[in-house]
Amino acid sequence: MAALPFTLDLPSGTVLTQSRAGADARIYAVRRGDTVLVMIYAGPASQFPIYDGQMIQAGGRASIVVTEGGRRLAIEHLFQRATAPLEIHVWVASPDGVDREQGERIAQSVDAR
Image 1 (cartoon, rainbow, N blue to C red):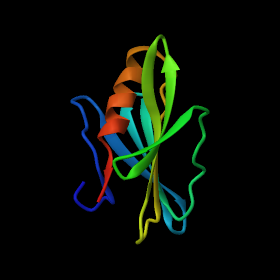
Image 2 (image 1 turned 90 degrees about the vertical axis):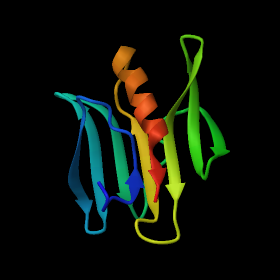
Image 3 (image 1 turned 30 degrees about the vertical axis):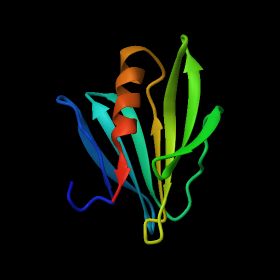
Image 4 (image 1 turned 90 degrees about the horizontal axis):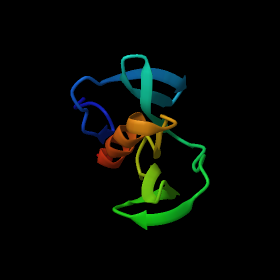
C-alpha cells in the first residue's frame, strides 16, 4: 500500500487487486468477494468522466455527483498530478444497494499522494 500513488480506506472484508492497463498505467479494483466495489485507474490519460452528473471541483479533485433515491452521491473522481501517474481516476463500480453505498464511501476515501 505504501508504494501506491494514492491512499484509501479499505473496510474489513475488502481487498485491493492490481493489473496492468498499458505500459505506464495500472488498474486497481476494490473487491469484496467476487463483487467489484470501486475501480481506480492510475496512468497518463483516463477517460474521465464516464458517468453523467454534476461536476464539482473540491479537495484537489474533480468529482461527478448524481442524485439517487433523494441522496447526492459522489460516484467518480479525478486527481491530476504533475508527476507520473498524471491522472488518478476513481469510480464506483457497484450498480446499486449496499454495495453502491460502500463503494461510494471507499471512493470518497481515495486521495492522491
